[in-house]
Amino acid sequence: MNYILSFSLFLMPITMATTYISIYKLIPQYLVKKKYLLFGLYSLYTLIVSGYLIIVSIFYGLIYLSHFKYEQMAPISRNLFFVMIAVYLVVLVVSAFKLLKLNIRQLEQKKKLETKILTTQLKLKEQQLNYLKMQIHPHFLFNTLNTIYGFSLKKADETPEMILKLSNLLDYLLYQSDKPFVLLTNEIQHIKDYIALENMRFNNTLNVNFNLHNISTSYKIAPMLLLPFVENSFKHGSLVNGVLQISIDLICTPDQIIFRIENTNTTKNTELKGIGLQNIKKRLDLLYENNYDLNILQQEKMFKVCLKLKHS
Image 1 (cartoon, helix red, strand yellow):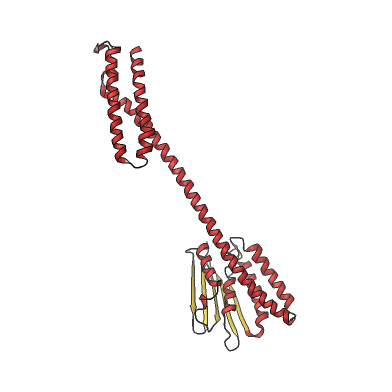
Image 2 (image 1 turned 60 degrees about the vertical axis):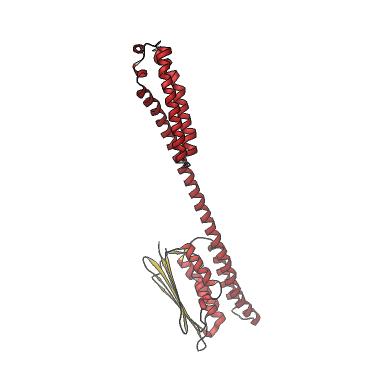
């Protein structure tokens, strides 16, 4: 028993030193960093040195513990191959745990990094959307306030009603448009308010047909998404035979929302004017990505827009 204890105590520092070099030097500094040539070279040095020390331990058992009497040596210390297997098995098991720990740590760091990147992308996306909304809102207000200003100069009786309609739109713009999505019925109501304002401005030179089909009260949509299309028709539409004709169709199907709007127009490349439609395209890319289809068509006397949104 004293022989085995003494031999084990002599062998223990060799095992500990070899394990230490493996888990704190070779693996983290060379293997993990993919310096495979250096890892192989220094692993070979470690194997040679540790093998030499294991041989020394065998001679220690023979000379100092057995007094040069081979038969008095413990069976486990007589076989050099067995002793080396025992030492390197410990090194391999501990190294495997070290590699597992490093892999888990790397996975956690990768997950944290991916989460950080995703959070940054979401914040950037939110900032882009807010920027686009800031562009849309003043543009919309500028046109509407100009209309009310013209009526106030004429001291028209319709001015108070126009102000009330604008108040409703402002409430929607300020308190609803910050939400990611609103009910489609809310967007429809404010489109109607906007059309009512424009009806007062155009008087007898405007003909608007707003047709609704199978509108679902549960469908949601990004706020201020359809209204700028309507605004664009009024702003860039042209009077043909003394009348601005605007036709709007909004259709709900089980899997999508279809919005069509067309207006009389005599100017080419209407879709390139102003910031309204350009901002809508950017918002659609940010909010709906590949879940929408937008077609803009300029004909000889008609400007058409068709937007299809996939319902999630």
